[in-house]
Image (tube, rainbow, N blue to C red; front, side, top):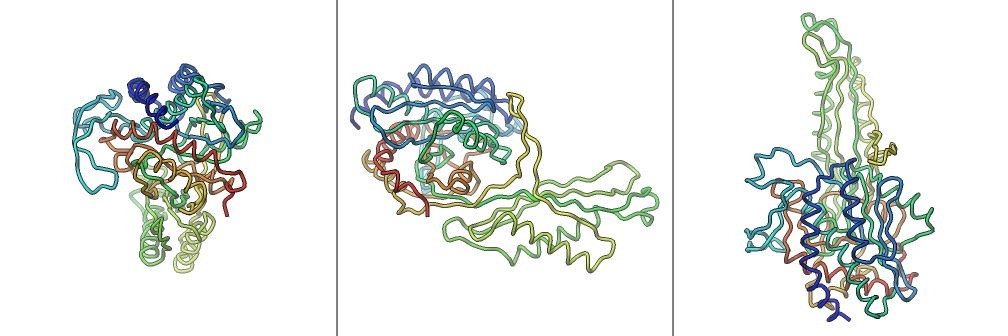
Length: 434
């Protein structure tokens, strides 16, 4: 069957590349995924998926049902992307142009530079290149079934909304509401977040912490009559930097925990007025052994220590949670937290995926993301096995050099199918996480 898969992939390759380019040409900022969701739906219908639908949050789902009972494997992508930023930084490329050319690119393990054909554009690496591969991998299975081949288990593609804001709203609503309401389930997940054809096995957790430092407003000509919240905020900024220069945990696979100040502003933020509020947002990455709550408590301890030294210092810390509205008009507020997770190389799910790549003669390499993904919901919360596998390289994500190698896309097209065929042979008892 692998030879047949390779043969069908050759036939579908040009269509897959065209599909990826159409995805890139369609802007789909977070909350604005309606147009691209229809492109996904139309393509899955064209490829003869057995069931295709959009849920009330705007997520899209396509299923190729097998001819034999077996596990359901979800292949997951997100439909949104970050802003292109300053267009002058794109070296002459249109972020929505999906231009194709041959340039210097890094190889899988970043050991050398080589010439490769690529598609340029925002979200090429995060994650439209991989989403195109996943959709067309399902198309290969649909074609095999039509030709009379036996397919075990079910292939489920999911494209979720609002991944980039980091609250995981699309994935959470898909898992908690949509699939149960439709009496659908899944046994494990393959994400197409950027892995450079490696199998990715985890990432650090993330919590967004918001500190509000309070002062007392006064006229700018008489600052001694007020308490400048920004001046007070510098104390906690310095203390946090000092604390985390010496206090962090490290995981042998995921690296060390970290904290970064990402947003700072004040109110009223006007001329001649001493600010009475200073709001600071921190991006806190944590490893197994830490939690969002423990990260919150660390900051609270720092606040308490400063308050003992300075009677005019007042501050509060909380986990950020802001309302997010889908393009369908539905709104929800979810704390901005991703749990840390990793899956062992010896887990049957990982070993089966590796066997799938070996069956194609592909090298098997492993890695871990620097950034966070929706797999925190899968492995971290609902405790189902998951991996990452895709043609895109993490190096090019969220940058004005956003691009994906077409030769890697060709390999991932068959790689997804071979991984699926191995995963569905696992007994459901072996899908369990420790």
